[in-house]
Length: 258
Image (cartoon, rainbow, N blue to C red; front, top):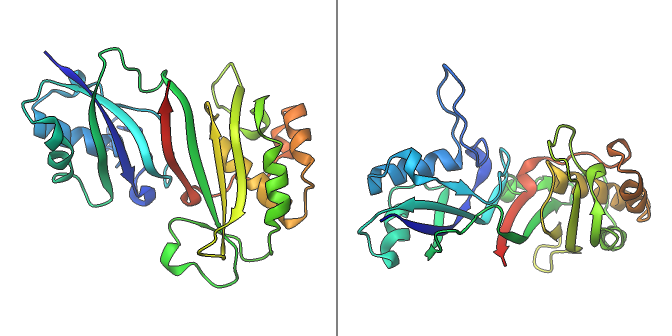
């Protein structure tokens, strides 16, 4: 009888075309996190792809990283649970890793059961290049950002709002209301060249976190006031929000369930 496994995955998204498996007709499949993991699970467990039901909680985009992506799969395996993560990791490429593996109820829903998730966006705010972290930060070199004003603006996002103004066109969702539980901006106490934006929410629309980060950076530059956040929320007008920042600064840190 197949068992349902719940896993948490970390990955460096630099060389991936996102989480979601992509197999263009007549072309070679693109390298994705789901695709790499699926291949390993099929070989290790002997379970056909269609029976694995491998799904992830968040469809992270190309270049986006994760420390705590959550996924599930179904398999009838004799591998002891305490060795499952080790067995998978021994076969994975060196830019991804299974952090935890546990059994889940048969009705566990890795997407629908999500109650909260946290993303972090890292901004490198200095003239010199971020050589050692260049694939994990957005380099803002032409302005000294005001993190205090950015944090003031971030606080205005907390609550239940229509966040369509902070979403890319074509998000495909009829309901654009989401609850943001927390949003903070602060200078990293260890690496003061970095400003971190953390945001927790019940869910987000396409590119929402990167657009929110771009809007907060514009506040930090002085181009917007903190109250500009209220205007974007009120009008749901994408054209008055900030730019979509590059993907490499974004990381999915954790996903929680009820």
